[in-house]
Image 1 (cartoon, helix red, strand yellow):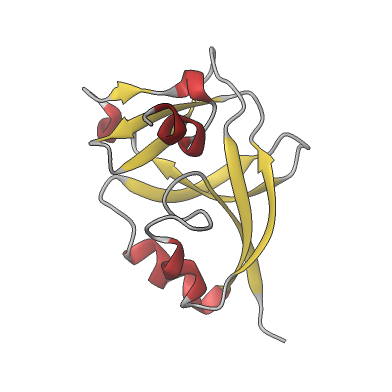
Image 2: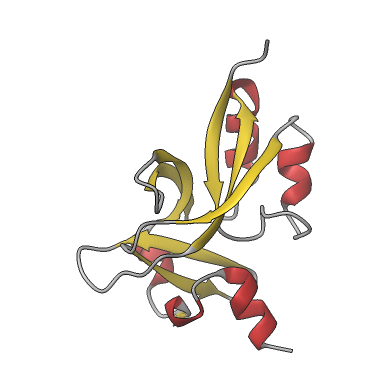
Length: 128
């Protein structure tokens, strides 16, 4: 049996989006859609991908997908992520803590905050 880790993704790694093949190519499997706890904010990075950051105050629940990623594939997925994104701990709405894609604070400086949309898909839908 392959050892896997749960990974929460909030942007282009989600099903049907640009970088989702990066998960599929390492044998990751979709678990569920859910939300983070109300402690995160979200920014649009050059209309290419979002960056999510945990905050002490003023956070909201952000839509995420949870995936089971083979341990051996996690580094491959991370290596293919855009600059300024990293793996950290993310707390889900149900209290579970999993690994997740988070943004580095410097990455969001000068970029459009899109927290009010509650997620990348909702933001993208607002553009059409």
